[in-house]
Image 1 (spheres, rainbow, N blue to C red):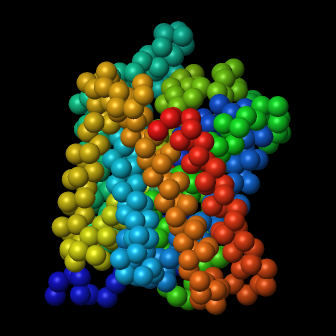
Image 2 (image 1 turned 90 degrees about the vertical axis):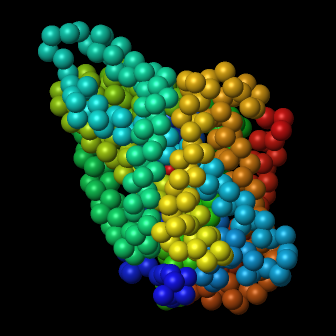
Length: 460
Ligand code: PFF
Ligand code: NA
């Protein structure tokens, strides 16, 4: 029997779905990006704005995406095609989101590959506190490790290849036997590792300073750029605008309360980002380093700090394993969103669809892996390299456009209120009207504003 005529997949259990969806949400965005943008934007006030963006914009759009998926039981393109009139331009919303998933997977996998290099280095003992050599020298060596990696095209290609290969191995197993099964293994491991690193942070000298940095807002440090960054990150971190929540929602049973599910996923994502900050900043402060180190915070500052701590090599190993697991469960959702399209809309079998798209993701990621070496003089957009140009197009345009279309569709064009209310399946009287208000007004206006400023800023 061809795969396409078997009944469409469903999650095996509620916890399986929550772990898979939280696995999609919790990724490099939480553990790599959130701490460094918080550091760059001065801490507390930025964190507060970020939390507001999650609650007022991210959460309502997350529910809208889950709703679209569960109602139509289709991939993102099929979902919009089913919902809107035949031939209507809303199909485009589905296309843009799948395109975003495709583009983002290609370079997300390159960064995820870096974590594999660090795991290998930790296994080799590269972050061990030296008994004989001075710490200054070690710091230099550890810092040089990152430069050596990004200057090497072949190494990055190898890791990128391996990482995509692992994603392929999981997604090919299907919704229950691949994604759900692995999420149930990887997510508890991730939580355990994070808990260990959090306790380690809390026991270190910089703990108090880290709490103050993250939770005492200093509004004089808040710029309008920081507000835009917070809103953009709220999108990325919750996996919105990339077909992932539509696709994962499409495997969700009708019996589930969608409001509660969305809330759980967003809460897990938020709590994990905050805990990652509370694991990282204390050790940065203890070592007398600066929180605003930028993207190198996790790949340069942190390893240097580890190399100066007793037992730091083990901490480094745990930390990069954590990062790799987080990246893996996110990347599989990006791959699955595209696989679902080929299965649902083009009648492909899962094996062929997964192998084809993983291969394509590898090929399309090659320029990103070579962006900091072989192709370093190529600047497609303004003075940005290949990697940054692709990231700019995906996160500044594709995501907000697809988020805006989703909010507009669900808020204004999906006119059957009873249907939406029933889908939400929450008993309380105020949740539905509140959500409907946010999805109609607050979310589209906020996303429209980011889009406007991004276009203004880059002049594109
Ligand atoms: N939410 C992920 C993160 O915070 O790293 C990134 C991501 C994964 C975005 C999967 C979108 C997606 F579909
Ligand atoms: Na996230």
